[in-house]
Image (spheres, rainbow, N blue to C red):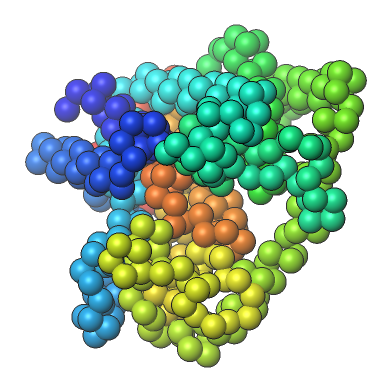
Length: 450
């Protein structure tokens, strides 16, 4: 299959959101995109180039058991078949993107760089739109969603001080909701930074300078969790980088110098604005314990008491299921706290034990990413695998305070960028080209046939 078509498919998570916001205001956009993705995967499979064996066996075993148990629950509860379809889509559609991405990445050495170029372009588009929305004001038509002004935007505020600056708000950029904006920009920025720091490719100073723009977009989004997890991810990245390269930390010095200098310059130019941004993001320190208590610790008691082995049915509380009779988990289940958590939502659908199987299944993919990263350090494949592991672990932690795994745009995008995790590389290599010849060899403890 043509590389340009595969690249188009891997950009679908964002293209469908843009289409739904600005052109076709219907969930049928998602259905059309899903057909394209599934059709593409089927064609690759018929060509015997869909490398299913690259997926860890543990993932297949746990996922298979998960499907069997949830299917039985669906039959017993007598739910609409559409609910089960929505649940399966949210749970396993990202895997289809991952398999297609693996085919694309393994088809050529430059394909990882093309993904990086696409990510950079998307960040520029998303960031420019967000800055323009803020500059024109909350009531400007540019901030409308489906004709409703300011629908989907959020307040740039803290719980203690309310709105920090009158008129300042969190834009939605090209998305229908500011929450999607923050989660997507975290996904894209982390991908770009991992490639810039780990792939041993000579790049211009401009490439690293754009890291400052990436950071500005994070701040404009107002998504506190996005910055918190980006910082956490960069700490992990720095530790891995120094472990692999020792004293050769020149790539790290550029962003370390650019980012503080940029922040200092912004503070000198607009001290009140920078102070407000600081207070917004610093408030995450107080927000985390509160959100964990309300979305995880308190609701988990209800899950242990009433939803340990079974639930209302897969898809019952998932986003998009309302047309089939689904509801929000915090509207249907009486529990302490709010329960806005992927684990709580999934436990309410399938039971805590069955939900834990899915968590372990995806952890197996994260572990595999680390194996690929260690085996092929210095090349694009290794950078992509490292990105996937860090991103997935961050999302798993994040999902305890927000139901990020119910947002298929974010999860599909992250998996669409992560085909490297299913690509094997040779342990010993002198050039990136030689590394790609190692497809099919053993990576760490994981054997991946080509």
